[in-house]
Length: 177
Image (cartoon, rainbow, N blue to C red; front, side, top):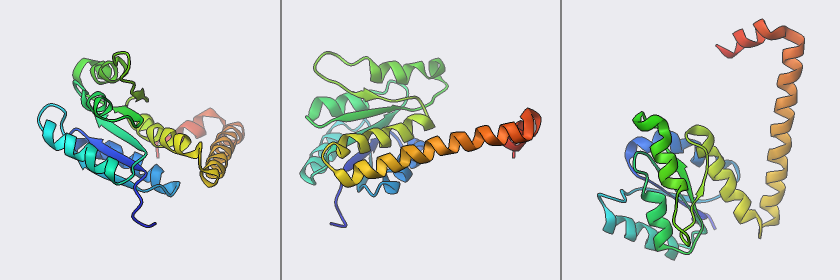
């Protein structure tokens, strides 16, 4: 099933693709299929509806939506589907990123959107959350998640050992490179 699409990713504008590269990279790491599109909740309402319907008809399991500023995109998608929606607040200069975060996290009763961190951490976490949701019914994916978590843990322990060996000055200097 080479063309299987597990996750539909929709961004509010092309500039959001820089951030969403991290989501795509993480989904690929777990072997999940995805689609990627641009649709504005405010400027292209009919196009967005077609994107949602097309994704649903392709068998998608989850939507990930990245948006900045008023960040209505994840909520509009959630209002049009029964599938899980994960919102990624895009960093912006407006209101110290709070506008996109609050717009996504403050959804009315009955229209849930899972909201992750603002920026790159959120882009990765959206993919991981999608993997975790799909892994509920996929034992192979569960095993990949376990390996991923072990690798994360080992990386932190390695950093701790490096700090102890090199000391803070050399460690911090290495971060600048």
